[in-house]
Image (cartoon, rainbow, N blue to C red; front, side, top):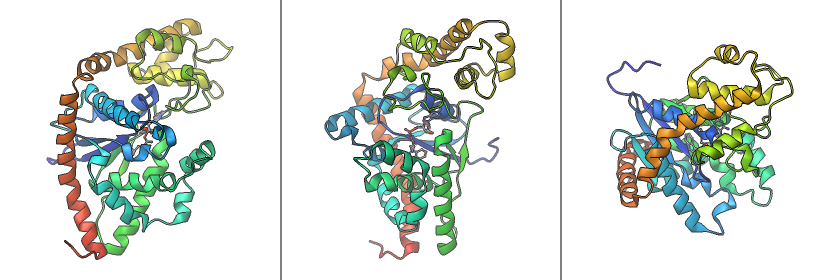
Length: 338
Ligand code: TYM
């Protein structure tokens, strides 16, 4: 994906502040965010509006604030540049909620009801199947379409949400003429679906009730090593990427992401060696991969004034960029302009 045009292509993505991001969030999305930061016009957001679709913050609203600030610091610690990139908090830019409302009216109930994540989350949180959870992908479509986004770096679990964003855009464009650019997903070579270390048939998730299944980006190195060494594998003692070897496949994908090695090269490196050696190497590679991030985070996270200053700057830039598309949409739909 060469970027030869003088004007840089636009990249947008976001992450929810539901907890400290996991190794899955990092390898599936954040690592790619960082790798695109110089060649594209990148907008990255803390999706705080999305995160209130679950009830985790209802007992403790200040947790949402703390998590949002922490996640913003994590974005900075990835090496993203608050001057070159646009790093913002979704709720600071009202255009997201405004466009989401308009797009709600151009989305059919049936297509939103088909979203796999909606079905999964409704089952998981049966006591709180709120309308926000249902409309979640439409707010995500607004996030993306507001900026005439070219590429959206995401993990595999968000593919369907990107497809509905494209469908909404096509529908709107077919009624009103060209308004939204059609965004493309951007996936890394490996790591698009990092699995739980304890149950490698399930996605590694921030909400995993078993903390051993999940490496968090702010885990200390000794904790990371322990979690990876206790990862579930199989009894074959063979490092090979094959069907049925979910645990080993997952560790190989993690190792491949951190070292850049192909699966074949990994198989050769560990031929005739046991899982003990392999797990130690994976753990070391993950610790090394996160080292500079961890150092940066330690430096930045205590400086609240700097974090707030960057967030304010990001919101201002995002508001200016999003106003163009929102204005166009309001005019085309026929709203009386103020
Ligand atoms: P969230 O916070 O759930 O996840 C953030 C990103 O991490 C990816 N991801 C994974 N990748 C690989 N393996 C895993 N186990 C794993 N778990 C999560 C997700 O695919 C995602 O890219 N709905 C979005 C947030 C959002 C958004 C947007 C994204 C809101 N607006 C606009 C892109 C564009 C989400 O699920 O975030």
